[in-house]
Image 1: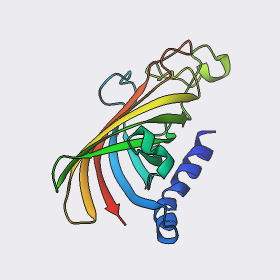
Image 2: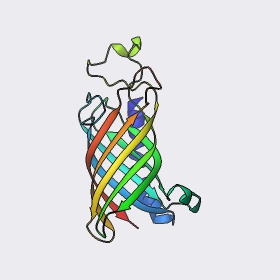
Image 3: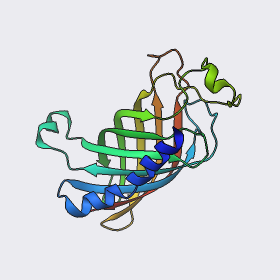
Image 4: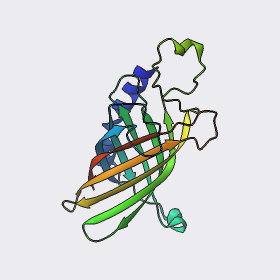
Length: 186
């Protein structure tokens, strides 16, 4: 199952740029390299690097009641065999601290391909003691991004994200990422 997920997620890597070139709705695309399960509230059981890509859409007028968040879709694909990858969607609120500096926060949901059941006898044979157990397939997702506009269109930022099922399933080890991203604003 994991190789299918990786092919699907990697195929999406080209999607944000292709969508933005043809759509007046895409405002920004971002790409980054993230440390897998590195820090924060997650279980710190996975190693490797995550490749991140996301598309940020213009905020529709009906979202102005919520301070005009921008819809976001993206993924983080783990480069470490057997580690967890995720596809996510949600809303982002960006705050400009000055003409050059910004911070943003995102709330949403994620679907991952990680292990969910520590008592699965079929999977037990190939598992390491360091396997991350996520409980549910769907999770809540929170992210924070802080950065600088290098030009009018290109940004660089430090990014942290966390997914967790908030205790809704029997296992809830969570997963964190931390890294750097480059953005392009259309």
